[in-house]
Image 1: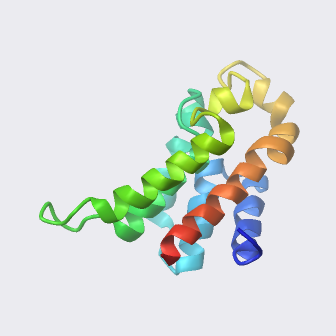
Image 2 (image 1 turned 120 degrees about the horizontal axis):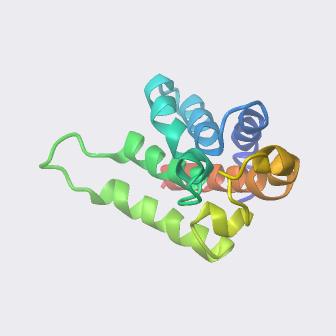
Image 3 (image 1 turned 90 degrees about the vertical axis):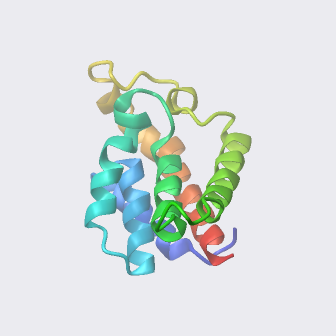
Amino acid sequence: MGEKFVEVQDKAENYFNGGYNCCESVVLAVCEHLNIDSEMPLKIATPLGSGMSRNGSNCGALNAAFISMGMTKGRKSNEDSRDPAYIPADKIFNMFKEKYGSAACKDITCINMKEPGVMEKNKERLHRDICGPIVRQVTGWILEELEE
């Protein structure tokens, strides 16, 4: 990936460390980079973080890739092809699964986020070792796809 998007990746990670969830952080950084109003995308991203509202399902950063492809390449009518959004989203999904072994937050973090106190107990480790690097990686993949 190189250094091309490091500034945007830094922003995404800073948002993540500053109180936004993984999905919100990536969406905010991408919106800012593309000069897109972030109010509605941020609202859409909120329940899709933390493995889809702490359910251990799709990783929130990965969900942000789908939001980003929809924002930038999604259809404007039912006459339009889905492929411009589907193809890059699918590519990111497959790269994600290849790199992390799963798309599921619970498989990657090995924690149940609904368990009382588990987030507070694991926050520093998750931000530093697992989720922070994933936020950076997915942000870079999104920007690479948007350049193509």
